[in-house]
Length: 352
Length: 100
Image 1 (cartoon, each protein chain N blue to C red):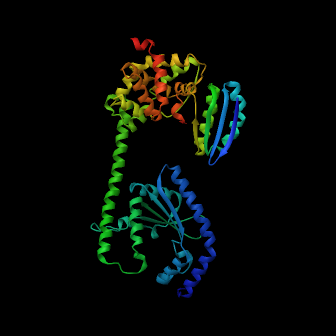
Image 2: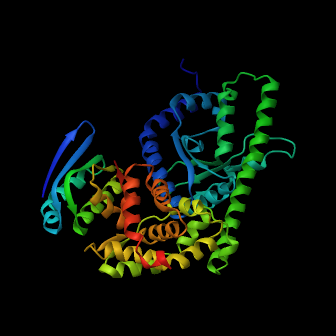
Image 3: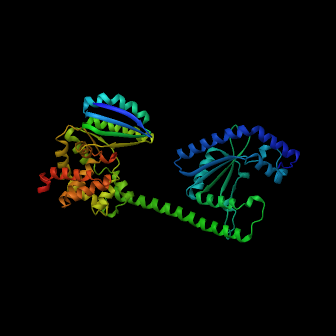
C-alpha cells in the first residue's frame, strides 16, 4: 500500500529514484575498494555485505521521520556497507583502515559498543558515516564481529523493527544471549592472542636451537620445516644424478614422525642426524641405477623414515605402514615395501 | 609414444601408450600443453599401456599437475605398473598425485 508522505518526503523519494543507478554503481565500487584495502592490510574478514536501501524501506523511514530530512543528501544510510570480522578486536583494526580510506563524518558516526550501561547487553556495532570523493551522498559503513552479527541478525528476525511490541520476557532472553555472546567473543579474541604468543615463543625456541623444548605439533613442525632440516640431505641426494629438486609440502611427514614416537622437534633432529647416512645410501642405490634427474623435496624425509624403520626392525610391515600413512592404505604399498626391503637388506647401514 | 584424449561424462581421460622417455615426452608435449586449457576439470591419466617413464615424462605429469592446481581441477593417475609406481616413489612424487 502506498504510504502518504509529505511533499518534502515525496521530493526526496523522487530524487532517490533518479539517483538509484548512481547508488548501485557506487555500491560495487566501494565494496571493491574496501575489499582491496583490507586485503592489502592483511586483514581477513568473515564477510563484506552491502545494500542500497529499497524504495519501500525509504518510504517507511520518511513516513516515520520525514520531518528530519530536507533532501536525499541528509539521509546517510541509503548506501550501507557492512564489514564482519572474525574477532571483536579486529573491528577497531578495520575501523582504522576505513578512517585511512575515507573521510569520516564523526558527528553522525556512532560506536554502539559504548552505548550500553555496565549492566546492559545488546546490539554492539561500530557505525561510520563516510564521505566519498566525487559522490554527493554519504554512506554508512557498519563494522562488527561475527558473533555480534549473529546476535543482531537473530534479534532483527524477532521483528523489532516491525513496530509490534515484543513481550519483555523475550527481550530479556535476547539480552541474556547478547551477554553470553559478548563473553564468547572476548574468549575467542583471548584464545587468538594466547595462540599468537605461543607461536612466537615456539619460533624463538626453534630459532635458538632449543628443539628438545618444543613439543611436536602441526604449528611447530611447520616452523621447523622453515629451517629446511632436510635440505642438506636432499642436496646430497640430488647430487647423485645432478637432479633438480621440486619443492613439495612436507607436512604429511608430521603423522609419520608422530607414529615413529617423536614427541619433540629434538627427537626429529636426532633421527635426521642418526639416519642421514642410511637415507643417502638408499637414494644412491635407487637413483644411482637410473638417469632420473628430477626429485621431490620429500625424498629426504621419505628415506630417513625408511632407514629408521628398517634399522628398528619394522621390516615390510613397517614400510607398508609408512606408505599407508603417506598415500592411504593400498595393496600396492605392500609391493613397494617388498621392493625397498629387497634393495636395502645389503646396504652398508643395515649391517653397521 | 601415443596419447589419445576422450571426454567421458564430466571427466577427461588421457590414455598413454608406449615409452614416455625423452623423445616420447617431446612427442606428446604439444598435446599435453593444449590439454592444460582443460586442467580445471577432472583429468584421468590412464597409464594402462605406459611401459616406461623417464624424468622428461615425470616433468610432463608435474606440469599438468601444476596447471590443474592453479585451475582448481583434479588429476588422477590410473593403472600404473609396478615399475612406474616405483619411479614415482623413488623420486618422492607418489603422494603428490591421486593414484588409483
